[in-house]
Length: 303
Ligand code: SF4
Image (cartoon, rainbow, N blue to C red; front, top):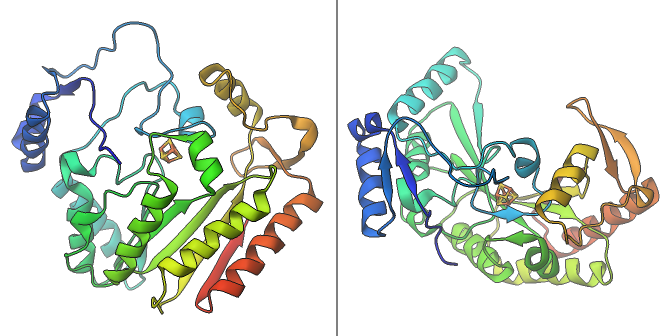
């Protein structure tokens, strides 16, 4: 897919003291992106509900919990960040400590501007007790293929049916691109996993999820390490629904509460999930195909 290019960039002058800051500036200048120097980010025009990720997935919780931040931010003080990570690892010895990359943005989407994630993978490769877990919907992974990862970084691809990706996951890598990226990552020997989310029920959903898992099976032929699967059904809170309808007034997401049942969420909010009978059907159907297609699969959870 085409790499993300911002319309305008605000650079904090302090960031030029860092190698990654200078590198990012160089990349942006090559791309002719207008640069404004200053400590403050001034967004002109109307308030825009955007996300801290270049993807525009209509259901994304980042869009709905961080909607007040209409710009993306990259950090260039990577060595300082890694020093903090090392401190946490040391404090937790002798346990293995896992770090998750991808909870507040897609970590691959902006990698071409900073190279930060590659630096992290290299850092964790040398770490005795630290492990990294990445989750992405992007295929910009070529810079990770020839580096020493020492099996300490696990790549998880967030995947879905062709229909859902096309319809709801704007500005992300396509169905084929993600599966191709997963194939490359498997060949590079990384621990591998998939998050199938959000799983939705629509006409032909069964046929489409089978197509997805059959395609994965053929592309990952020969990968004998364990492959993990995390299965997450589509859900929404009332606040999310309100924001989604503001951002995507014509959305075709099923946000009808009558088709759902209420579930108490860990963040103190009710969410609308599929009724028990339907969610069991999703869990059983998808688990069955995964187990048929992969002897090396481990389904970590369905929620
Ligand atoms: S790519 Fe991931 S983080 Fe970005 S909008 Fe989509 S779901 Fe959200």
